[in-house]
Image: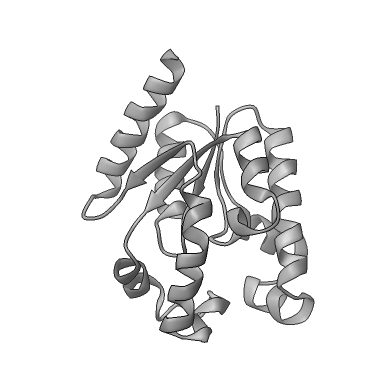
Length: 169
């Protein structure tokens, strides 16, 4: 099964993705890390030197390559990936999409001091606007997991339960 974790910056996509992949014994690929590896540049430099549009196009091409290469994989998307162009449709066509949902204040507390997130430099108000703008895209995922107050183990158990329900249908 191909699973893509989506959600805003700081939602736990990488943390949950790694642990879920280990539990299911499938590869885990973080889109941002894959892009950094392929371009030999950190994300902030890609934004700075090549621009956000280039980055967003690279994200979906990287996703397509991953889902073509693997039959079973857990993918962690970038926070903005589902909200760019027709990406959400592509994600849903090629994988089971899981929205890791958390409230803005929780997310901001996790990301506000992270220098590897170029959009954080815009400030809290602007980041909140981005969060609100992206929410409708996230909500179109196959399933939503509210992560508020839950441990990674509890989140993974919830995901596994919902995946079993999907497999039965």
